[in-house]
Amino acid sequence: MARLARAMPVCVAVKRQSGPDRSGNDRPSGRAARPKRSAYDKALGLLARREHSRKELETKLRQGGYDREETAAALDRLGAQHYQDDDRFAEVLLRSRIGQGYGPLRLRVELQRHGVAEARIRQLLDEVDADWDALAAAQLRRRYGAAGSADQAERVRRAQFLLRRGFAAATVRSVTHASVDEAADDIS
Image (cartoon, rainbow, N blue to C red; front, side, top):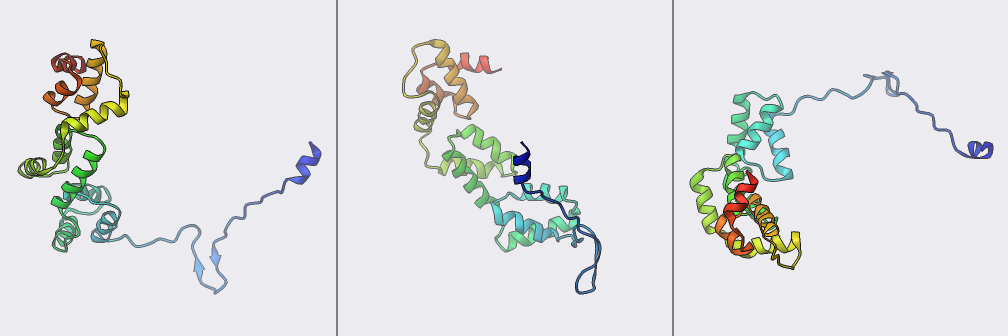
């Protein structure tokens, strides 16, 4: 044990002292205070990472302490420059969620939460080229495997899974061959 203790190096933390640096300038201890970024810069930084809806950006900026007028001006400027576009956001979100295996009911609710207009949601869902039955069947295979189920309780469980993912009752019924009314009752 004594040999092991001698072989291990000893680390000593050095605390940074406040005071003048090598050039003679006085530096404060810790982090230097930076000026607060403008709402436009903050929103632009958020948009650089991923698409955001106008409502989502407004919420994030308000939580960041920016006032309503500055937030509105920043969002108007970003919209005019085509950096922020709710239509583009909705299309990207829709493609992404379909790729993740979600159904049209879940997509509708999520787009509504992001402030997308109901007419635009209907238009996007009508234009999307998705085979909801095939997508639901693929989700069942991914979750439960390729084997079908003769057991009624198992069919109800599978139907509940698809209903939670946002598939329509007719789609769930055709894919699981279960009575969706029983599955919906069990979810509630």
